[in-house]
Image (cartoon, rainbow, N blue to C red; front, side, top):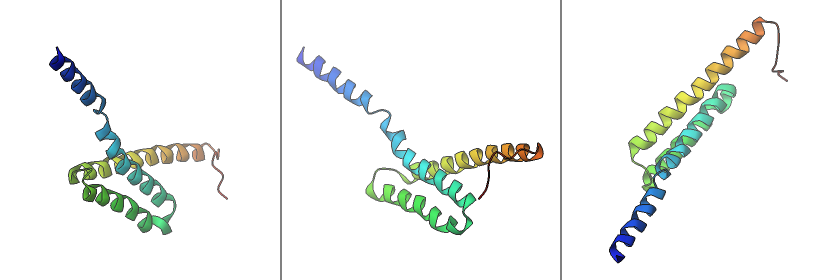
Length: 107
């Protein structure tokens, strides 16, 4: 009887930790997405901003939290996600300009 409850407790603990790997890769996804979007709008800051996800990614590998391909996948996914969002924004912006409406006022 004792062994079966110990096995059940171990199974419950391992089931609770299933989603943590994706959340760790989320750091690289978010930093790369932010770098792409900020680099798109602020050309002067592009190289400085792109250094941040690179430093974060290498630090994740150095600390041993990720494998290099986890970080590379996070960078690629974040880059694609940001360019997808920017593409939608540009399409909407061009459509509204053609209609003669400006919904974003630049200072």
